[in-house]
Structure formats: structure tokens, C-alpha cells
Amino acid sequence: MLKNIILIGFMGSGKSSIGRELSKMLGYPLVDTDALIVERAGKPIRAIFEEEGEEAFRDLEAGVLAEIDADNLHRRIIATGGGIVIRPENRRRLRNLGYVVWLVVSPTEILKRTSRNKERPLLNNDDPEGTVAALLAERERLYRETANLTVETDALTMPEITTGIVESARYFFGST
Image (cartoon, rainbow, N blue to C red; front, side):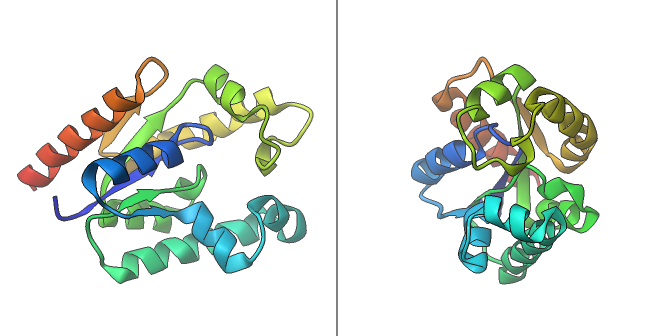
């Protein structure tokens, strides 16, 4: 495979964990856009949201993705933030970078996975359940239009998810 595998999906969908496993399986370096944003900003994502607002975070996110795209490197696993699909230019870049996999997770599982993590700025409110429902409704179409593959992860094991992604990506890259 010559291009990259890009993981998109809502917060708590397992992009970072699955990215690490794919990286081990394939020997491709893992690029985590959220980690790059934290490194560039010199502070946690929560602090960026609190001090500068969501729009400033989205600007940093778009800048990091533009850098990754400009590098024109191949054979990487790219794990993205949950809202990266909001901006049209990001969706174009994601598709340009390679094989885009949307990791789908149910709202119940999202809340279970994120409930103990206070570093999720969009869920630090009085109605995280309502926030998840609203954000999913807003983003679902964007994830769908960006992805080459959709994987519903709730009932799958990590090996099932990663093996399915690798086999689908091989087929995709072999036919393009």
C-alpha cells in the first residue's frame, strides 16, 4: 500500500487506539492530529478551547492537516480529532491523503468511553448526552461523505477492526 490510512469518527470512537494497533501491524508511523495540535500550541486541547475558543482550535487543526498533506508522505496511519470533518477543506485533504475509515460508535458507547475523561471540552457541560446527540446529528453526513469505509465498532474486537481495515485498504489501493 502506497498511501495512508486515515481514521475519522466521533470522540471516543477508538481512533487513537486503533491507530496504534494499525501502526504496529503495518509498521507505518502513527500521526495523531490532536497530539500535533497540543505540541504546536504548547497546551492541552481543553486549555485551547477555554482560552482561545473552538474556532481557534479548528484553525490549528486545519493547519496541522494542511502540513500533513503538504508533506506528501505515504505509508502512515493518521488518527484525527472528532470534529476535523467540519471544514470542507479538511474533508478534501483527508480524501487526498489516502484511504479514509470512519469508525462508528453508538451514543451509549461514546458516553461510556468518555464519561471519566474531563479533557473532552465539548462534553464538559450539564447535558453531555444531548451534546453527543446534537454533534452526531451535525457530523454524521460529513463523516459519511468523507469516508471510503465505514466500520461499526461497538460489537467488534480490536483484531477484527484492524484486520478488516487492512484488508479493505489493500483492496482499495490495489484497485486504484
